[in-house]
Length: 341
Image (cartoon, rainbow, N blue to C red):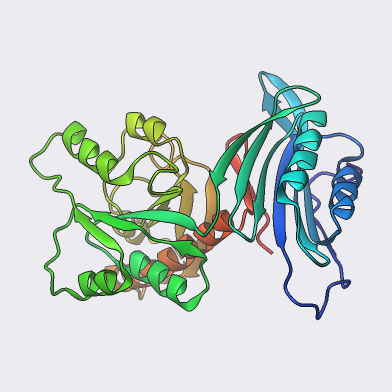
C-alpha cells in the first residue's frame, strides 16, 4: 500500500467542482497489506468514467488473525461519475475482481441506495450479499423511558442531516396516545409498538420483538438501541444477522452496567462521556464507534451530570449512525476504523 502505520491520507479532486450532481458512491475495503491496492481501485474507477473525490487510508499493524499477526490495510474511496449514467453492475463486477485478488472484504454503496457487501472466495471471485437494493437504509429503533436520543435522531432525519428511514419504534415503556412523541411518530408515519417486558420471561418478549423487527433486510437494515435499557440475548443477535448500535450513557470502558451517571458522580470524575458502540454478546464490550466528552467539577450535582450526559448521548449516537449510514465504519479485530471526515 506504500504507507506507514497509523497514517491517514486524504486526497481531493477538483475535476467535478461546480458540476451538477452525478451518480456517486463509496467503497470501504479492508485486506492484508499489499502493493498496488490504491492504483488498482483508481484504475477501475477511471474505466467507469468516474472521478475519485476523496481517499482515506489506514494501516492497522500486527492484527492477530488466527494466531498470526498481520498488517491490515483499510481504505475508503469516494467517487463520482463524470457524466451520463453509471453502469452499477459493471462497476460492482470490477470491484468484485479486486476483492478476490487482494483477499479483501468490502462494502460498495451508491447514492441510488444500492449497497453490496463483498467477501473474497478465491483469487478470482468474491461472494456478494445485497444489503439494500435502493432507497435510504431502514433504521429500526428500540427505546425505553428516556426519549432524548430518539427525538434527536428523528429531528436530524427530518432536517436532512441523517439519510435514513425509520419504519418503527419499539419500546418497553407504555405511552398514551396523546403524548407528544406518539403524535410526532404518527404524523411521520412511524409505527410505535409497545412490548410489555415486566412480568414476562425474556424469551417471550424477545419473540414479540422478532415478529415486529424481522431479520435484517426484511423490515430494517440495522437497529439502534436509543437508551433501550434491556439486554438482548446472544440468540437474538445471531438471529437478526445485522448490525445493532447502542448508546451507553457513560465513557466506556469505565462505568459499565447500570446507572453510570451515579457511578461517575460518586467517583468524582472531571470528565464525563457517552459511548456509541456495536452490540455484541458481551455487555458494553462491543467495538466503539464514537465517544463524546465534557468537563464537570465538584460543583456539578447528580442532576447536572445527567443533563450534560444526555446531550453527549444524543450527539454521539447521531455521529455513530451517520458514520454507519455513510459507509465510513469497518471493524478490524475488536476495534473500529472510522473515516469520519
